Image (cartoon, rainbow, N blue to C red):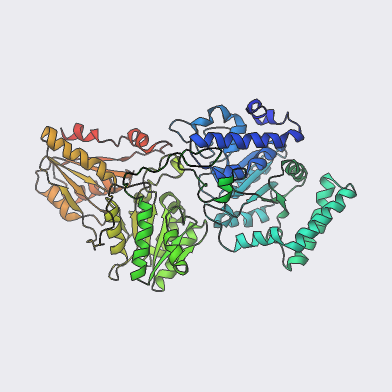
Length: 632
């Protein structure tokens, strides 16, 4: 079925093919990716868009001696398939199988781990400088940055440094004008202007034909094109090319789906020393009609699909289902914003993922997608807050790590009323350690004035959002909630104010106490009921709601009366510095002589791999049977 691809177990095998065979190989590679993901869902459209780039890069460069960094990492499926992982690609994103992102522990061909975006140029620059220091003049360093990653501030910081460091490295800008949603901001418009300028493209076509007719090829061709082309481009646009202005030689734009031409270009660029950028125009989802027509929906496929029609096979059941937490956020913020004209929505390129797009459709002037720029999103929110608005800044939990200084310095230090909604908190499953949102609580706990809460269910999420936007509420808030569905079908109940720092008793008990934080408490709440019914063990279950401030009234009751001999805390965040340790600290400081034994349950002090969420909970020891063992 794949006569050429089946022969390739390494880039060395790829180099045995002639250039004329590469288009056929690209067809096979694209077909293989589609076939694999049709029954093992994962990130889809991005890797289809870089098939030709992937083949051309590995045909021209000598990896792993040459270093290739992919940014964002979910573009790298074709790369993995061509570098010895084709036969096990059906394990992609499964527990114990291949990571969905480049992973330096998985293969020598993965030069750098890239789960988050906008990091490739920095990493590549470090490698390029290291090669210079080692005297490795024959080593090529290539960074492929795409899928909106160039909108991240870190990429610009690296470009600025790259200009002055003058390394021998190549940045390939995979320009598909997309992240998950359509790319936003001035840079995306700038790149479109470069690639669509009618005057420039007419000149480029005529100049290229002239050079071909005069048989100016290879290094000479591109040298001459650079000298003539860049001067004409500057005259046409009446401005200096941004990259050229940084002293980075700019080439392009080129057709990112013409593999034979890409090989010629890359071969020529290898001969040019110094910092270079190749601008390649690609189509996200290329070669699969449904993905090309709806690139956002096919960014990551949520289920199996029919290869021929694109029809999803894992259709929703007719049975009523609880909503996803992200959708509860989306509908609730719109509902609140209709009543409170100070509410604004902010997202760093995750409008669809976090469901802020629901509000965007009705109130586009009150929602802001700032691009893949978490640091900017936070300080932008701070600027809105200091001006009297109530920004709801929605960031995936693990992505919020990138904006820690801004949360501390720009928001908390100034006691600004910014409501952070941390989507994808806890274990997220197949995306793995780069995306697990397990560090947010420990990260935020030391920050003075920070309110940290997590809803038990969808109704509680609505109540927390309602409380967070009230006029009497002050300072920064963090509401964390997981990926996926909750457990409440009838969730559109009237919103109510909850008392800040107050938990609630879900089940009375005298033999011990279970203190849970967030939706994970639902799993353990059912086990508490079973223990009482089947074994007569009476355990009090408290949904603490807040990790900061803690409900000291509940804690004083537990530790002060001396009746509770055993207490267990459960969270889906890191144990180190998390909710459970805060309980321990309070007990040791306020009730040092209390005889109560405390067991903390949560994410252990190691990075958790990828896989099904239930499998990962078992790996972390977060299972309901520990209640039987501990309280029996």
